[in-house]
Picture 1: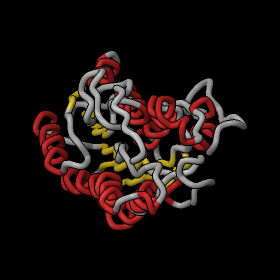
Picture 2 (picture 1 turned 30 degrees about the horizontal axis):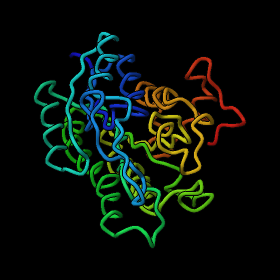
Picture 3 (picture 1 turned 180 degrees about the vertical axis):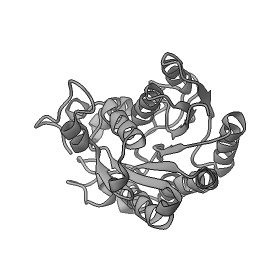
Picture 4 (picture 1 turned 45 degrees about the vertical axis):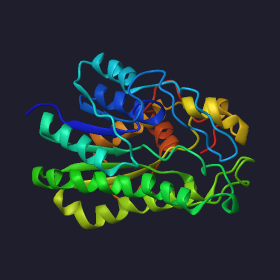
Length: 284
């Protein structure tokens, strides 16, 4: 049998990129999914209806692929959009056709766009629906597509990148250091998935985890979020989440099946990322 296969969404930058590279370093072949194929592509990434932002964000599937290839593992770029169910089906089908299996699914991609940092009365219902479609329904579509093969092979791992916003209120209103309702309700929905999957499918070898990353200094946080009260310099590096995802998929973490994993605390406690520890300035 060849290498096991991981499928990671939102892998063009940030947490998804770090997880994809970390899993490659652990010996997985990795299919990477995102919208941005090449550096410099421009699309809307403003978090508010009040303005547009089309500046290209750093990162791309091509750049992440180069890092994975440098580990010696295979990489497959499968461009897709989590708001386009057909593209999700095509990405999974392409991976399964090329490599015959998907052993780990990482649902990391999330809705990027207006409404994320707008207050409820300012947010059209259609944008709340987009949050739910991208952050809850898309992961469920992907999970439905990969589970039959995992069950047939006797095992598999689902990792959902959730958020403290899914089970806690913001410290302030959106725009002042908090976040909008769409983000909270959609991450809350995502947060409920792992426990039920584990309850229903653990006897068939399926493990499902929520990873709560805490505040992470991604490229987008650095570029976009200062205007909304977020200081990227206080965030942990994305590699923290990569290290935790790697640990969950390659260790005897069955005792955590179905649970929420507070990534920064686990990474610090187990020393999963040499040279990094939680500092007093790092929100968890």
